[in-house]
Length: 154
Image 1 (cartoon, rainbow, N blue to C red):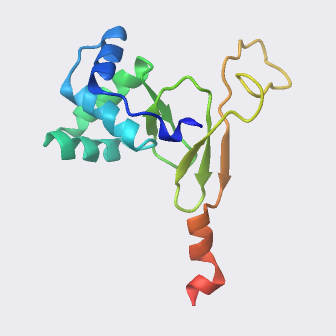
Image 2 (cartoon, rainbow, N blue to C red):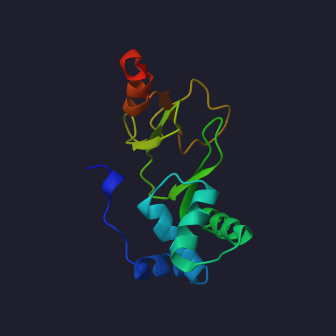
């Protein structure tokens, strides 16, 4: 089964990952990882809201600092779909792609389309050593299709 419903990691596993990445283990860092694990593809503000629910008051700047540190160390992956703010998910090294609803902006993980990483090969590499392909599929999700159908508007 694809990682959409992966086993929930415990706090000690996150603490080990932080240490392995050379970061101090702090409650805000642990909580950000937990919030993003439970609900991937959150914006920085949505992450902040999730952290505030668990820890109480935390500054927006602190959340940005944590997100940048975790992204720089490869614990989080930042995606920035066209027309959207950056969104965050746990880095899983599984080379997955995304399916995004044009209407509500819902983001769904989908496995690599075909073959091994980087899945797709460009006609010319222009001398680059390519190690990853980022593919985004766009469409309209079932909920938005239903809400936009003529029968739902009557």
